Image (cartoon, rainbow, N blue to C red):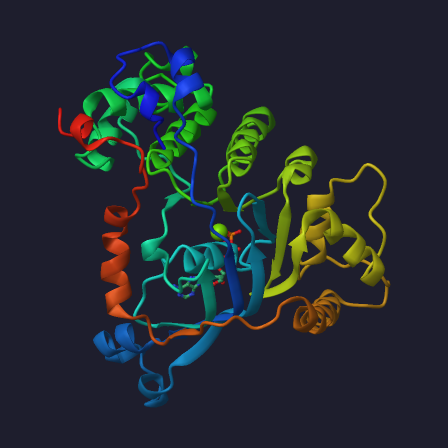
Length: 379
Ligand SMILES: Nc1ncnc2c1ncn2[C@@H]1O[C@H](COP(=O)(O)OP(=O)(O)OP(=O)(O)O)[C@@H](O)[C@H]1O
Ligand SMILES: [Mg+2]
């Protein structure tokens, strides 16, 4: 939201913008999911149709197999919270994030369950943004130019050039990119420029131009040194304090990053083992498996608990039987913690209209209600 007082004032200093201009006043959005399941029909049919010599029997043509990527996930993501989706490799973190952000498009997929964003079953009417794992940025332009260019493309024409410039300055200040705003973005190979942490912040800054109420991030800390990872999560935490619902997948978060999380979802083989307040996650598993060792990173402890190849707890208990036990325990707990929602959404298979809506979602995401129309028509 842009404060009326500063619109058209022509001030250009980043600090004065900070006092008067805020990109982060958002409509609070609570996200809830119930009984969310994702299945994929995997079939060897297509390629074996093309290469009949590989076909061993006619059953190759007729028996597509169904694989459950997510099974009966219940979770709440209240506004103004930072949620980390944790789990070992292949546990379903990306799948869950993609389903929540409505980016799971595949004709073989079937998504069932209930999703609610405030009172809406679809994200298309909610201001939201997604930051992917890789940074697709032009290496030869500066940080400031990158954000200015993105603002020209992303912001509606009702926002004037002056306002866009202020918004860009404000984002640069808020993300701590002021020192490198006139440096080239770089790619770390042929063009030297920003560090990998800087690139992540620029990608985040571009998405913040959308003024999202819900922000999804795919492994924002992966590939970064611990300090940069901590810095990014600190910025995300500050967004939650302004009401943004932040949902991210995390890979090996350091302990102080884990401590910044408000909520945690621990996945194992597409099942949730825990979905709730972060500080209660370890006590939940300590009761069911074994105590957290002194000085151990709680995130490592949780990820190991959900890993199919890590034995812990009772010596005679195998990892698969531990995980089955934990799935059953959380299923009973979920029935108490997560009452059904009022609205039901069932998509099976993926609805092509949803794909079209998702492709043009950015058209619906602008909430800058305080911009006077006359100012907006100047540029
Ligand atoms: N479209 C798809 N079709 C078939 N299988 C899929 C599809 N998407 C994901 N999977 C499978 O679902 C499982 C979970 O994948 P996902 O990428 O969600 O895991 P992850 O927890 O993000 O793993 P990682 O830590 O490696 O990123 C994997 O076995 C993957 O192969
Ligand atoms: Mg993943």
